[in-house]
Image 1 (cartoon, rainbow, N blue to C red):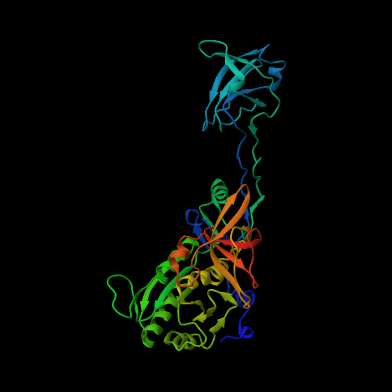
Image 2 (cartoon, rainbow, N blue to C red):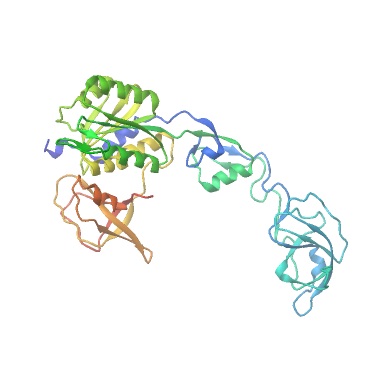
Length: 412
């Protein structure tokens, strides 16, 4: 198929896939299992954070008026009458002219209105029974009021929020043990072909399977649960059983090879039958990764990626990863496109395709720069291994060093 009119534009192919993805049903999971997942409901605080007035620093609880005029030249002497540590529930009283030693996080005594930091004092007696205050205090100094971070009834996290470490910390501070989230998708990865082996010696016509291990790792690095479904030989019954089992076990299925429009392949025949004609076989206007298939097997989305190793990984980044992120209702399915300055000339000719070239990106003095990796053919997996970005090269007659083009960071 050589006519560009028969090619599917990348954005059309991506929209076709995403429009057919329905997010998984939300469930309540333990907070410890929710990193990277997406909230299904708004979260409101049922208490104040912090729950009580406490000190932000080690020092001395005082009445600010008792420190009027204090300076290094004219220190104010005050008596130390008690100590309050973090975790204490005592509320000691103290008279005018006295202070209470206090540790970070401890509850501030009721009658104190300021905290003098340790570094603004010196001991006035060998036994520590009194101090010299070297700086005048202001009301509220180093005091964290109850509810100053979050007030009871306040909405703290919205539905659709992807839970990062800070959000996990907020939920923990509110006492949540379980959280309503969209679950982490289980993604099955299958390799098909009688010529494939996992390990050991290989004979004539046999090859070691690299796509499945690479795609399993890509799935894990994306934050999904990978299910290794192994190698399935070119046998219609075995293939049908494998895909039916995958649809039962998994939320999405990835396979590679046998997806070109002109391929006469058992995998293609089996998938066409199992999907009840739902599978769509495309030639996308990109290089590499032009052949791509997508459909549903027993309601489970299946991504048919090209067989060449680099093409499979590029296709995963452009189609499978964004769609599976939508399964978990992620607010940003696609990776960001960042502009980078070319360090090399990019030689190409017009062919109606967007090219995705393996590249190395680095930031220098705040500028993102990109250089090409040598060897861009779709079977050269070793070049992909040393790349950290895909350079997005629009159709055209080439680009010169110093120009800017978009990049997709692979390790983002």
